[in-house]
Amino acid sequence: MSKIVFPAETLELVKKIIARYPDGKQKSALLPILHLAQAEWKWCSSEVMDYVASLLSISPIEVYEVASFYTMFHLEPVGEHVIEYCRTGPCCLMGGVEVYDHLKKRLKINTGETTKDGKFTIKEVECLAACGWGPVFQIREKYYMHLTKEKVDEIIDELSK
Amino acid sequence: MKILTEHIDVPNIDTIDVFMKHGGYSAVQKALKKMTPDEVTEEVKKSGLRGRGGAGFPVGMKWSFLAKPEGVPRYLVCNADESEPGTFKDHYLMWKSPHTLIEGMIVSSFALGANTSYIYVRGELMYVINILEKAIQEAYDKGLLGKNILGSGYDLDLFVQPGGGAYICGEETALLESLEGKRGNPRNKPPFPAVKGLWQCPTVVNNVESIAATSWIVNNGGDAYAAIGVGRSTGTKLISASGHIKKPGVYEIPLGITVEDFIYSDEWCGGIREGHKLKAVVAGGSSVPILPAELILTTAAGEKRLMTYESLSDGGFATGTMLGSGGFVVMDETACIVHNTLTFAKFYHHESCGQCSPCREGTGWMDKVLNRIEHGQGRKEDIDLLVDVAKKIEGNTICPLGDAASWPVAAAIRHFRDEFEWHIEHPELATKPGAVFMRKGASWTK
Image (cartoon, rainbow over all chains, first blue to last red; front, side, top):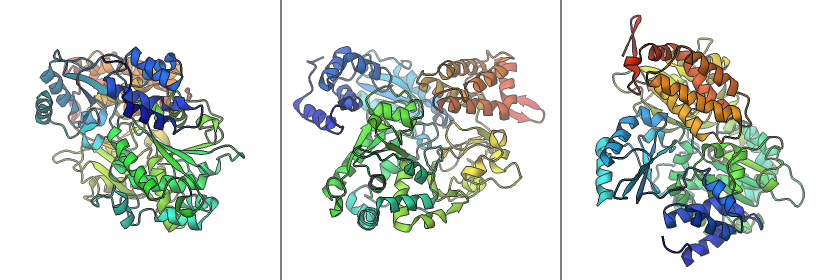
């Protein structure tokens, strides 16, 4: 991991985000900045969280307790592509169970694991608010909807290149 | 009759120029130049608009509770943390037509006297957040946000706040905690947010769909909105339809059409998928009681059930359900009720914030018991145990997540007890997750 400092452009964005809240309420910027930090360093190590605390002039424990509460923040290293699949009722009704089983078999890993080459991590998500377009998974900001086994193969093939 | 989605399929409606060509931001012009904040509130009251996030509390009344102490800022916070299984309407609206929400935010903020407002969007929808950010910048560039909007003397700044992936943040006080940069633990009420909300200042928290509807109400008047619908269920409602129907998707319906029409008409869901028949429906998101086919179509009085707040809750929980968020999950005879109930129970177990013991422990207990029934290890006493645990969670928690966790389990057992019994009595057949059984004559077979 490179030195824990945001690039200058991101630091400017951090300043703008903090300015969205009244004076003294900069802690409100914690979630947006944690998202920026995760995008920069892939996961929220204690060093990353300490850095975020310093940017907001709050104590590190305040960052740890928040990062560990919300499921979007990775507290362990993850693969290059984190596949977050929706396992709730509507997606299961639409064939999600079979599709996700296929995904695990294809990557030869279970939920929560990372492939040996560090390329993929699979995580479960509790509903992606896309029930009518399920089964669905998300990789970073992109939603993949109406999944079938064939579509999963295509996506994995593409990302494996 | 479409109010929110009339232009949703117009190409580039997500851009401000196209949106304005189709009448967009006319409500801002009217409200800020020709109306007082109280007049806007009065029209919303007259409209009978009820909160579209699930609770159905009258929006105008909620606004009128807002405390207005001198020298203290007020806030409007839009609850866009949609994350209840079955519900995806706000996602759709913000994705396709972000300016519909932004226009509503301006009108509503003006009515409430808020000069800073926030849209709290679930973090998973980062691509929607980017769409909203772009649309907000367009509104600033047109002078529809910022200082002295359209020369009216009214100032408003609008920001998007991403969540971090926690369903509980859809509860308004948990959302405010999260917006303050904390864990999303619900607060004890009172005080209500209208008195002490964001940073202890008076705050209104409204759902995306509720806020978006206010522009039409300003343009057309509260009476015109109230004329749509039936009784106290006025206006239109976005319904997220999913499951075993021919046309899953988001539909804007006038409240008051029959459930039967909604499921079977080509205008809406198009019927159950070919070769299958309706088994059950969860009408308002995963938290509301599931109903078997005959009860979702017909009320206790034997009349056709309507898509309204009142008709869906007809007869209380014994026969009714709720309109809730409008998350309409349809199941045909291939759906396994035990498996579906387990997926919901796992959801609430995972999403419990852990603050209250009945919810923290009870949701885990239900998940565990359902899991063993599903996997052919159920015990005879497990069904009554589930009912008992559900009862002990309901009404015993700070926020409604406890109720939301207990209702689907209790209702599934109430209406499909035989299916749970079958799983327990036939462990050799139930070991495959999602095993479905169908009634053939008097016997149960896989």
